[in-house]
Image 1: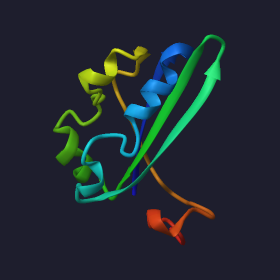
Image 2: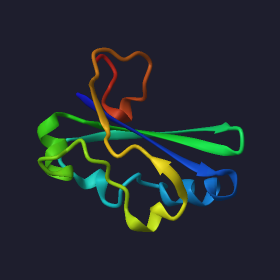
Image 3: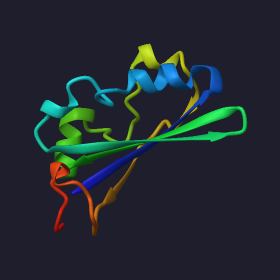
Length: 112
């Protein structure tokens, strides 16, 4: 399994609106994509800004390429959401998930 990790930063003023744009799915329709395994949305205040980290789980890099294209490391930031962001990673990072512990069965990660 592969974790696609990306960071973006908003102002305190826009943090709630931005978070609401990411719910219930980080990307519209992502839950119907073959190979999609689930996602996490992390949030933390840092001074007068709020950092968001998204972690999207896929079965393989090939499944990510099917969503993001051959340049799969390029960030996918819909225009409607850019208005809330002060800055963001232009590239997502990809990590092989080598172990998990105690995660929800709904993400298909128990015993991975």
